[in-house]
Image (tube, rainbow, N blue to C red; front, top):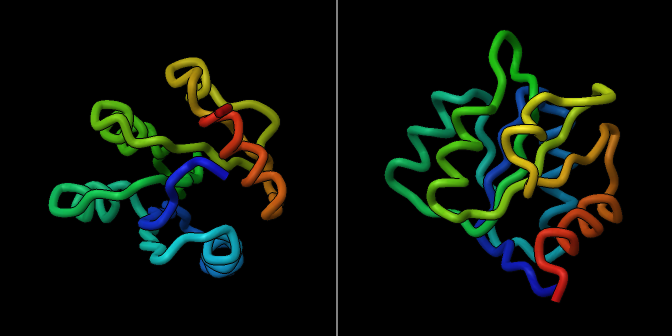
Length: 119
């Protein structure tokens, strides 16, 4: 896999899903996974740190991860969206970001990685 995921950010408000995804990212080669459960927490983290890759849950309670996606796009940080819904309007604003459907697996995440870095 060519995509660098050493320092990964996971924005997920469901603790069980977050724990599962952290494990998947570690299995796929992440050295560290930072988990944030809200947009504010993620943006605060990103204001002082860089990451190589991010997985963004689309719906975070009463908010969406759009602001985090904008920040990552502006800093050329690859990311993907995760959602339990059939479609997400965010994919229209960020057509380069793959969308994985929940429940996702390490294989579906890896497939999304490959679409981000087809080399």
